[in-house]
Length: 272
Image 1 (tube, rainbow, N blue to C red):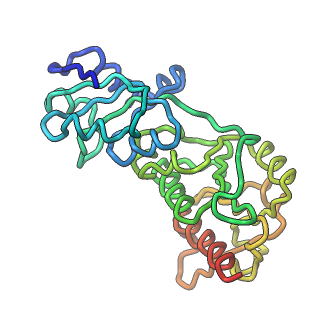
Image 2 (image 1 turned 90 degrees about the vertical axis):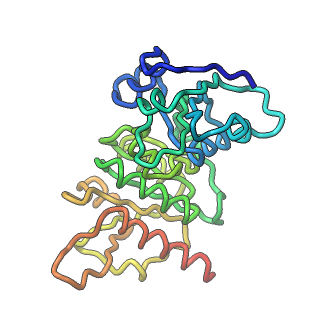
């Protein structure tokens, strides 16, 4: 394994990586993004992402730890750079850094390439419409991974799917899930073509979520916390479902609501 040394924070590769972290336009135009952390980088590699380069803080990480990220006998290795702690601090974006940063090529999943059967006999899909906060979407992806969701459709996204804060909050869930960005119209056509029931989470004209058959092919559709779902999904739904709200407030965090509903689908499927 060939390792190059970087000792200056002014090194062009350090500056270039910092730019990718800071500017979403740069990430989109170059189809590259940045990952920090051992678990997240390993998830990239396991799930078929191409690593362009790895930078490791030589004050806390050994070359052996970098070697261990790759499967035995792996032929393709990225550029690997040993970086001094001072230089590494320029590309570390997490508070408790693990000392590894990777530059990774984007991999966009198309709806027609989604595969079912990850965990369940019948498809289980999570659809999120116009979620704006990277942290919320990251938390949704962690729930999707935990519940064995087949795919997450991000409709009309208002956040960059490879935003560093999204990657961090998902703990690598952006890599372990099948995630496709699409329009509302594309998502609806795909769901109907696969005979998947559409259940929209909303308060109006709804039944309790636990009275809905989620053991059948199911798509749970979530909207934003501020405005909820658009009329597009309300009209398209097969059933409208709600979570009991017993206090004075009428809204849960969208990631919490998604967890309640996805685990109900798990409960029903595991009890069959």
